[in-house]
Amino acid sequence: MQERPLEGLAAVVTGAGRGLGRAEALELARLGAAVVVNDFGQPGRDGSGAASAAPAEQVAEEIRAAGGRAVAHTGDVADFAEARDLVALATTHYGKLDILVNNAGILRDRMVFSMTEDEWDSVIRVHLKGHFNTTRFAAAHWRDRSKAAGAKVYGRIVNTSSEAFLAGSAGQPNYAAAKGGIVGLTTSTALALAKYGVTANVICPRARTRMTEDVFAGFAQPAEGLDPLAPEHVAPLVGYLASPAAERINGQLLVVHGGMVAVIERPRVQAQFDSKQDTFSYDELDALLTPHYADRPTGETFAAAEVLGLRRR
Image (cartoon, rainbow, N blue to C red; front, side, top):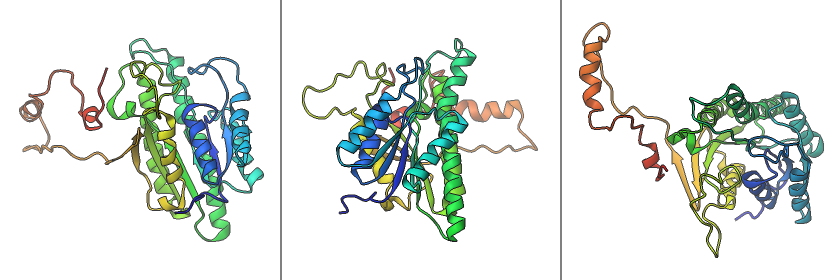
């Protein structure tokens, strides 16, 4: 087994000052990658508070202290120009960019009937626009390199979605929508960049971080051993997807947590109904669809939660 499969590769990890991003940056460095550690450094998980260089700098120093290569970037990836500068930092500092891990995000939870415009816009901006911004400049870099070389290049994108997109999350319409959008962005990017040698995949991680402290408040950390919800359970999959071994994995969605990885299929047709007329009438739809859903309790959503082994609270 190759101990350092990412040796000679350069990576960017966003939101890497804490939680999942930190664990992912450390794992990529352990596997041999030179890492640009990005974090805007605001203390509030809702994106509040003054930005700080400390989180990114501390993780970069942690990597260097372990013998790795790392540089900090403290810009806001949701800002188009700062995302461009982030990719440029990797290409100027390391000569190229090979791996992009998008992880940065915030939470501003509220029920849909109470959510403000700013609460909606800010979450969409950081998650969805932030993923797009870095992807756009990384993709341009790889396309230019491929055209100059007249051949495929090495490129890996690992994006971060959530089971809130798969199974719903009543108090997070902004977050769930952003995470669903990231899946669409990923699959589109995967198709667009495959001819240049680049893969793009998306994960739905479950981990105990400041972003999920409310979700997992009822699940105590074990007194001994690794917490099943530790971010360190997620990081190895990110390292693998960033590696040469994952060259055949593209446009895929994977759920990961606590020693489990689930590969999610694209949506499949559950049932099909064809009109016996030129077009459907109300009565015909009523006769076909109402019996199909007759055994489902009123208001029940699709069963993705049960399929994934989730328990709604």
